[in-house]
Length: 386
Image (cartoon, rainbow, N blue to C red; front, side, top):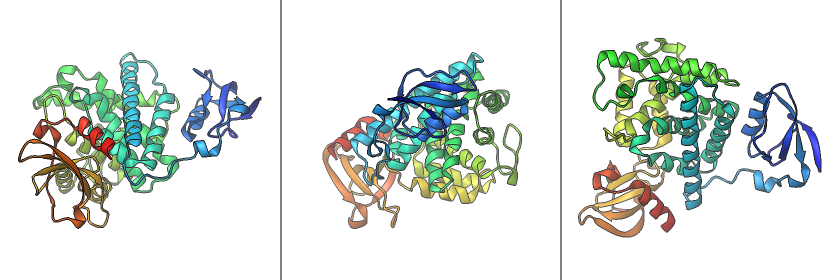
């Protein structure tokens, strides 16, 4: 049966057929179920007052409530996380196109995909961590903003930020680098160090981002705040507005850490990314230079972990292993799956090892490229084997 319900009474699981009344001109692309609270919030932001639902198609609570948090990464979780990551990249591509053409950015798909990211971070943060480890060297511009939004999501949840603020933070992170589309490719993709003149141009991307985000209908002040502050430094020598000290909010300090960490660890066409441990040490150096908030950097490292899930490590036994599960009681002794002999340079039988109960130990964090291996294929193989 089709009935009209107020937007304030709309719930997750109900099947929306059409808009009944609104203050704007929003139209549905198709009838569909309400999959998350983020969708409802987006409808509200568009000025929707009431909708027509089909009560015969309402999903039961058991089909809409969040799944319990996974303790171990599964193939299904990993596939879902990859799909979210790939969808995010497509949305990011459309955002850049719209910004370049001076068209308004549509916040609806951004709200939807960021809510999916948040839901996945609650149910299976390990799958998201693995997904952002697998990147394409020639898609840095698209993938960086998506990865920073994922890191911001995981970090915010680690710090127990209010739920109603988390999505606004993730949306801001998702849009933080949209202004880079205004930077000439020869500067944006230059493999070597930028000249002083080129760096001045590069820094203008932050101002471009602010201008573009300000014009986005429905954007929240908090989303704009985190995007605007991502290149500011505690010592006041950041950009574009030289904000310093206590004037940089906690959320602005958080995105600066996430942004730098992803930039350090990501592979690019012209540069290999650093291991997580090396990136952590650089973050700590930036704290000493009064660029970043020391307490938040320490929390970020605790959040991500000394050896993050999905990262590769070399063991004392001359084996490569992927980190499968963290050990909160002993961060340097996680549970891993060994799969490759560095001595004989070939794959070996997969072996699950709890390093807290083994004589073997981690020698160092490594990258798949160091051994001419494909991290994507390795991760999929090990998860399927699990």
